[in-house]
Length: 289
Length: 237
Image (tube, rainbow over all chains, first blue to last red; front, side):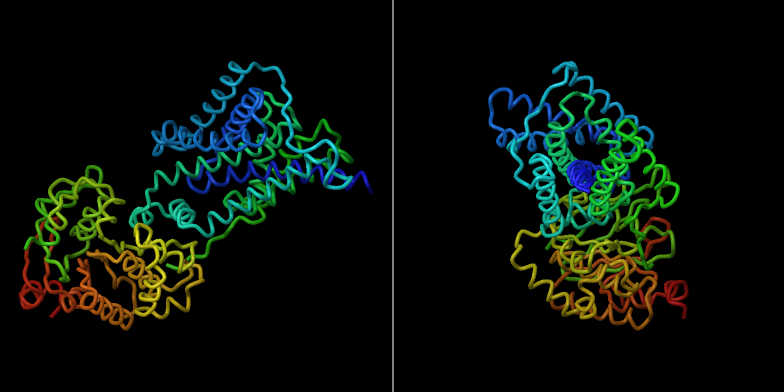
């Protein structure tokens, strides 16, 4: 029983990371109806940025916040310079751009930092501070994710800018007619998504270690999470993230073994698409005309 | 005094299909002007052209300023509010959020709550529905919402595209009554595109008749009402 509880809590910890990345995916999806395959690599690149700062002697938290800002700017710049020109291109063309971005970021990181695996520090102390079932890093990751999600919720729900971003995502033409600069809202969305991804990257790096391919598996779990929750529902994506994290850990520990863990994500993706394509919380919009 | 809106030799096209072939018209501040015409005459396109939502050639002046090469978002900032064809509701947002978006570009953030009450004064129904998802409002309520959203800008000029479309006659009457009140009380100028020529001519001071992308007739609303061919073709008596 104790081992089971331990696995569930560890699952919630990694689940919180999947939830963050899934949320990034959903944010971009809501605005563009496209899945950004490079989301994981953007997070990985930002995590390397944090590693460089910490390696150069900067304390953890300043490096953390600087990395979040760096990721935000990176997201905005990528949208403005790379995504903008293909705005009206066919879907497949944009997907190719996303995949190119993935490969380029991956290779550039390997070229700059080499492919050797590096350790990444956790900001949380060695001794457990959240009780004996969970390491302090796992507990800390959950707390940080919750804080990020809460901030994001407050931003979208209660600020005029958040409202404008939601409006621009769901009805660009009307948004323009009330004076919202839709293009910039999109860029801002990319920036926010990248910033959330960077937090996920920095939280997962102490667990999986830092290397250019570290986000491959995690992005797959995040896809599964986003699909389980409903690709157009932010809250659903968060729920999906935690669910996938727990399932992965519990099944990996007691049922299928660690080697087949990643298959859980694939089974979930295929399963959801076959049985309930809109996910658990995918909205069915009711509109009167 | 220069006119509030001057349009000269306005051309517009969707891709290769040319829709406007040199429209000319002007309107004075504080007045209600209507553009009449059959389906496909170019009424909606004219409104869209004013807001830079379609590619145009020609001159558009607003309060003496050229606006024909500005972006839609900047034209709104001059005080031009567009109530679009199909109402443009943000269907997944609440009624109140829709209204607040109307005031998005305003700098005087402190007055926005008072303005919410002001539009609720015109449309009490929206107040009852303020927390409801806007996509679930009835057609008439959504039209009221679209007009209210435009009013939240505190516009100098309102562009209304078929405000009567799809509404029950009683609601149309109520809506037009409120438009008249807004025009009289708040001195908001209005450019109204309508198929319902009789209602539009009762509301408007001036009218222009558009046929296949050109202005073919203009005058005061009363003159147009008395014109024989307009009467036969558009008023039906």
